[in-house]
Length: 376
Image (cartoon, rainbow, N blue to C red; front, side):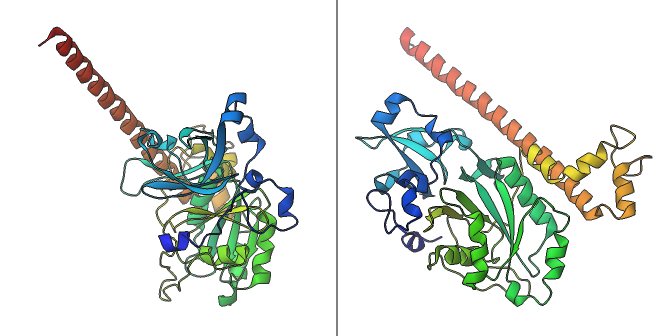
């Protein structure tokens, strides 16, 4: 999202709010930003008196945009915020403690959830957002619809510990929406909504998943209509939109930065750039939860080390032969399992290398101090 678009995000004025609805007044300014007992319990008595809590609404190169009881304010990115471990650096959705008088950064509160991906073409993780309660996985009723990609998003969401929902957009442009909703019938624990993002009544059904005090993220590839949904849920034009390419249903990036947008009902909505590459790492639990049906079948195989290929007594292959399990789903599970194993190994090697390099630097500095003390 460009800086000009960030400036159009509804600002939270002095006291933490602008115009408030009757339902919104029941929440404090911090609660409207997603403050919960989970975070309150992390504060000491001293911190309650000496510090203020703020939430990261957007991250820019040289500053963070944060919001708290005193409204929105910029927070310069100082070296103390740039932790050596990328996972410890503040990201959108984080809660921070600042000194009440000076405004200096004190510490980041423990997260209730964390979304991260393997950075494309890199050997490190990239933070997406923190402390997200629910995720609207957005796909379109066109060539963008891809079950394997949806399963990838599900693994990410469930690893983070958030609640997933699926939103199928562009229903007004599709002659046969039953083909898309029918493809999701096997995902019984995944609520699905079919919407026309340009129809306010159609978008209104999503408000049941955007509750006051909750933080909701929109995830999906470019062109699926995330920014249109954001505008529809907010009731005003907050983000730019653009048409997709008709030949392949792919979209152009209209959102440039991840940012949180306050909604009138008291919730927060995270809009993020479309991510075609969503590398998974350290997501074993999310993968197991997404493919729990395959896991249940595997436990019924004759051999504990069954590879689910041509072994006798393989319950997984038997389910494929009977039509109870889609072979594509098995292939995608294997693909994601290999990817997670590979990326997790890469991260472990990278961290080991970083520790070795840090040890080397400390030894060099120690020897330099010893030489200086000896007068060499």
